[in-house]
Amino acid sequence: MHESSSEPVNGLQWFGKELEAELRHAGKSQSELAEAIGYQQPYVSKVKHGHAMPSEYFAESCDRFFDTSGSFARLRTRISRRGHPEWFVPYLELEERASRIRYFTPFLVTGLLQTWSYAEALYRSWSPCDSDETIREKVTARMSRQVIRDRPSPPLLWVVLDESCLHRMVGDRAAMRGQMEHLMTVAQTPHVTLQILPYDSGAPAAGEGYTLLSFDDPAQDPVLYAEVLGEGYVIDSAATVATGADGYERLCADALSPEKSLRVLREAIKEFA
Image (tube, rainbow, N blue to C red; front, side):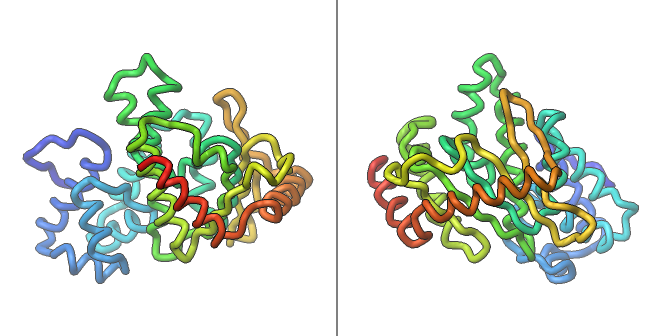
């Protein structure tokens, strides 16, 4: 790996600078790299300029392209873990490998769909004594998780949001409008299904949020993930996972269809105009 003349200020920029240096050293262009590893040029550009977290596959592909000894993969692992609490890392590793992610949240937009402003407002509320730098590091870490949606073969993401998520003021009106617009955009991508659980659906099939992860790897059993008071728990008990899956099916049945959910989102955007 090679040093750069300007000092990066965060992990994403470190990776981008190293990528830029390797391209220059190898005499290769950004377009040549994109074509060789099967990624679109805009994505490669974002990574090179420190605006996007590289996926695990992207980092490994860079190591093969530049014939390095795993340098990009190791650097990517270091920066992807920074900013996350230790108890969250086991789940994070599973999330990156999941082929199907089902998420229910009763009061907040899930981290995989949050905007920067929305996530920043949450962290400032949760950790009011943290410095701006620490908040920035935490938000960057959360945003970095979203790179799984940009993979060549992204996981199927199915999200059920309680209607209260669309009206609870997180940040200011501009932050909320941006979040609602982002949900609209993401909900219309092929690998994402978004359903709103309306107020008039009655008592929900679950009172707390949780996540179900499934995998293509036959050696990896499905898991359920839940958080309680700032601690996360990965549960692989077949009975618990089955109970969670049954509850999720009832939540989906009670929720609005994806098409009707988009209409509700459009109204939410108007609310924050």
